[in-house]
Image (cartoon, helix red, strand yellow):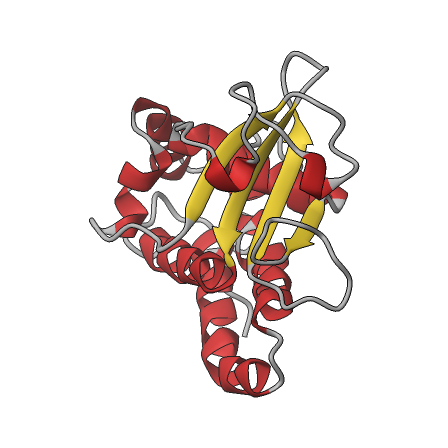
Length: 205
């Protein structure tokens, strides 16, 4: 069935697939990879529809785009989609050295981002995730925050270039916590009432 409101109905269809396939992903010990698969569809696509004012399929709905902009007012952990329940593990940091080797990442205080105490608003965190997914800047980390082949995956790191063009932003979730975020994100999108008579592309004729 072609959806009437793609920006919310499509991620809800992703939720249905998530619920169908999550047990198999867990049985195969592929939760992190499964979460990235879901994110590429359920987060990246609707986020573009909500934020790109010159999207070829029409301007975003004002309620949705406004909600994303308002996330600048509070830290990511206070974002409305959490419903007061923060993720088990989340970190934000600005990497000030070469990002090529995860074990050598350092923030401004000299800490590895796993131990960072920096905070950031929800809008910036979502854009960091978006850029990382769009450009393939996702790193699998072990319990020490290192990218060591063969080790058990514990964290997912999302990197993008900082506005200063020299350093990099990084957002890190626990493997389970990123999947929790995606479920919360999808549920949040369903709370916005439909604006106008939009069809598949939500574009004005």
